[in-house]
Amino acid sequence: MVKRKQYTKEFKLDAISLVLDQGHTTSEVSRNLEITPNMLRRWIREHQAGDADQSFRGNGKLTPEQEEIRQLKAQIKRLKLEREILKEATVFFAKETK
Image (cartoon, rainbow, N blue to C red; front, side, top):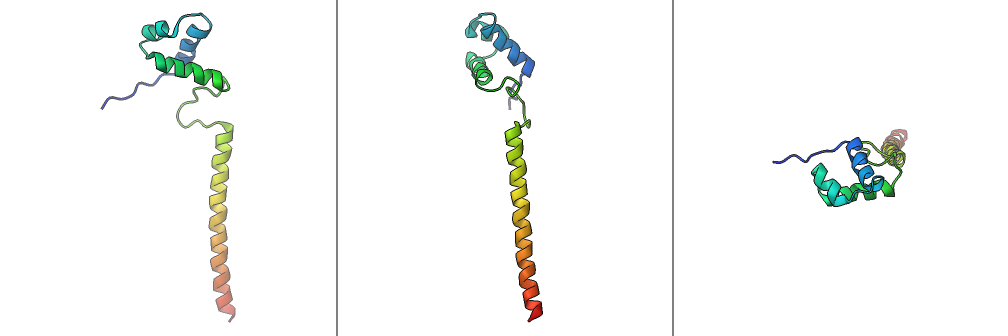
């Protein structure tokens, strides 16, 4: 099995800079850096579409919004579990008082 090659954020930003700032073509830069032109275009799109600091975050690095969503989902799960425990306790104590 062939392992996918991973590129650093700095490498990607340098490649983007060659195209956007220095005026080289995507095909020329991709040929020199030995990457596909489509990959370079995708990097450029991602860089231009989002916040420059949030581009190329890497695996497991969430945006602040994604982190908040993750925390809220965990809180919902915990609250549902607590609610179920309270329901079972209510049923138990209702049987004890009879």
